[in-house]
Length: 156
Image (cartoon, rainbow, N blue to C red):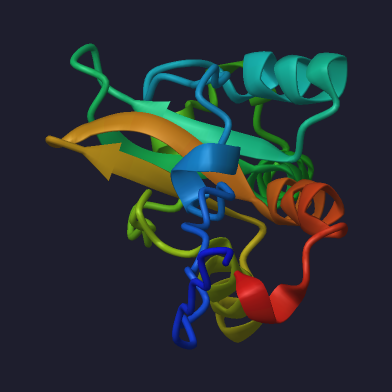
């Protein structure tokens, strides 16, 4: 007579999801940054050359001081024309946004997408131990969505 084996019902073993969905998994770490005393014309050249819309302004210790964007540069161009002032004297610190909202690198990428929608910002710097370590942009979130497209959204 053969051995009869009976196993009771087993609960499904949940597969641990190791899909990268944190901001830090998709943020840009190799950033183009600017200095507060840098001429705005240099910033404009850099933005055009690298096809970016702005970047963080940091001090010599890589601490975030602000962000300068295309809009900030255009404002400077407009003011220099209006007041007939030479543009060569314009420095980043005068035109950068100083009250910069940051985002946590451990934040879920979908929560980051929601934050972009709520604030209408194009980028958020990521700070760790007081230093700039990266930046997440709307484009980075879209890249994450493309990578995660094969997954079931509910599983993430």
